[in-house]
Amino acid sequence: MLFQGNISYCSSGMYSWSCLCHSLYRPGGMVDLQVGERFLNIDYAFAGAIAGAEAFPVIYLSYDLASMWSPKWKERMKSHFPHLVPLWDHITFIVPKMHKYAHRKQCCYHFSLLFKQGAAGVDGEGVERTWAEHNQLRGSTKEMNPGHHLDCLEAHFVNWNWKKQQDMSE
Image (cartoon, rainbow, N blue to C red; front, top):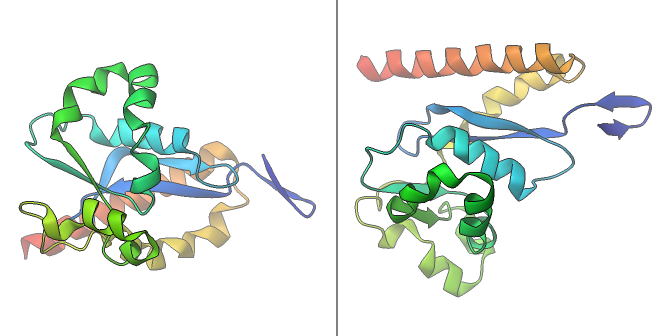
């Protein structure tokens, strides 16, 4: 539990995976964070989000810390999520275009979307643009118990996906 002043919180933030092109949130791809981004939390969200994606020939993982997250990724996946091992050949790590300038030059080239087939027109920042709206929930969810907190967030993100799908069909 995170303690801020005399108020205790079960979560210090959240992490989520979404579709690069459409900003639709992946089912099972959200986790609460406890004092910062720990890679185990990110791995858990990834394992939930990638479920059912076996049919995709290429999976681009856009994460601002991809250069730090990916080196030991296979080891962590092998020990915690062995069912994901067959997907390794389909996965390519990238850093969103806005975040790449905070990385070393070699990271900029290795993790750049510009050099990935079929992805040059995508910036990888879709999930970042959505947080302006989602952060409005913070005031009402921060004092909820863990179960109600998750139910409220799930309802919100399901509604977000529904609205996005409706807008795309028009």
